[in-house]
Image 1 (cartoon, one colour):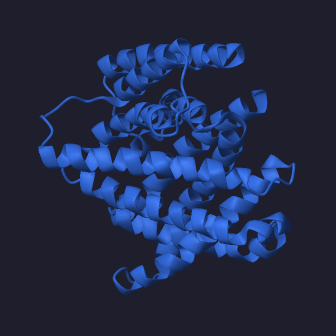
Image 2 (cartoon, helix red, strand yellow; image 1 turned 90 degrees about the vertical axis):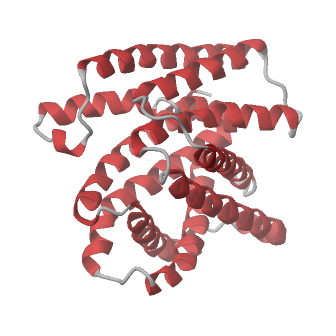
Length: 300
C-alpha cells in the first residue's frame, strides 16, 4: 500500500508541476487545445522508440482483449478531453479545476452501482471529505452554471472516470510481476497510439518546431505523472488512487508559495488572502480524507 500511496503522491506532484510547465506555452500561444495537440505529439514521439523494448510478451497471449481495452481507453480519453474543452466554454477554468474533484464521487457511484464493489461507511466519508476539499481548494464563486455547462461537466466527469478505470484494468493485464515496468509499457502503448492518432490535427494546427519544443516540458512531466498514476492504480485501485490524486490541490499550494518566493508568481494565478485561508482549510480536510481512507482500507 505504501508504494501505491507514494506513487499517487508523486503523480499528483508531477501533474501540478506539469500545469506550471504549461504556463510558458499558454502565455505565448493562448490555446489549451493547441497545447494538448502538440504535447500528445511530443509524448508519442518519445514513447514510440521505446515501445519494442517495453512491450511485455505476456500481452501477446491476450492481444485482442488488450487492443480492445486500449481502444476503450482512447475513446474515453478523447471523449473526456472533448467534453472538458466544451465545458470550458461555459465554466471558467479556475472553477473547472475545482469541479473535477467531483470525479471521486462519480467513480465511487460507478463502482458501487455498476461494478457491484461496495465501499465501507468510512470509505464513503473519506470520499466525501476529499471531494469537498478538492472543490473548495480553488473555488472562486461567480455566475450560476448553465444547463449546457452542467451537462458537459457531467460528461467530462464520467468520461474521465471511465478513463481511470480502463487504465487500472490495462496495467493489471501484463502480469510481469514488476508494476513499474508494466506501467511504463502501458503508458508507452497508450501514448504512442494517441500521438499517431493526433497527427491528422496538424491539418488544422500548422506544425512548427517552436510549438513542439515549447510543449515538451508539459508533455514530459504529464507522461511521467501518468506512469506514476498507473503504478498507483495498479496497487491501490481506481477510487483510492483518485483520493490520493486529490492532493494535487494541496501540492499546488506549496508550489504556489515556492513560485512567489522565487519571483515567478506570474506562472501561477493571483490568490487573495481569503483564498489562501480557504485553501489551507481544504488542505487539512483533504489530508484527513486520505488518512481516513487509508485506515478504512487497512480495516477492510
